[in-house]
Image (cartoon, rainbow, N blue to C red; front, side):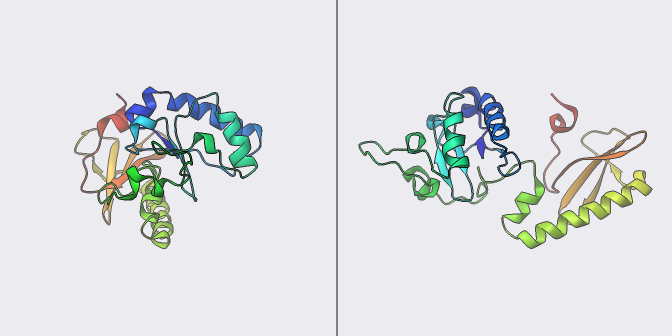
Length: 206
C-alpha cells in the first residue's frame, strides 16, 4: 500500500511506484505482490510511506534508490527492513507495525477507518473490509447487472451531474453504477456509494 496523499506524491511516490513494480517483475513477484495506491495516511512528515499487508509493516522516507533492497529483503527473503522503519525520537529500536506507532495507535477512525488500507478505486475492497462474503456477492451482482445493460443499454438514467446522453447509471442497493454506451460495447466507468455526488474529473478528466 503506497500512500498517494499530497505530501507523498510531491516527494516522489509515483516514481517509487514505477521502480517498485519493475523490481517485483524482475524477481517474478508481480503476481504475488499487488502495488496499490491509497489515500493519505496522515503521517506526511515521514513520507513517502508504504504499508505492507497483511502484517501492517510500516516503511517511511522511501526513495527510488532503496526500493531494490526493500524488495529483495522483504518480499523475496521475508526479512523486513529495519532501517526504513519508524524510530521514535530518543529511541534506538524501530517500530515495525503501523498500529503500534504512537501517531496511529491512539487514533479512533470512523469516517476514515479505511484510510491507507484499501484501494480507493476498488469497491470490492471497500465492502470486504466489513464483510468479505458480501463483497463477493456484490461483485457477482455487478456482473449480472452489466450483462443486463448490454441488452438494454438505455435502461439507466442519464447521470444528472453530467447530462450526457450516452453516460448513464443504474442504482443498485446503495450504489451508483455509472456506464458509458459506446458503438460496440458498454463500459462500466465507476461504482460508488449513492449518497455521494459524482466527481466529473473522474469520468471526463481534468
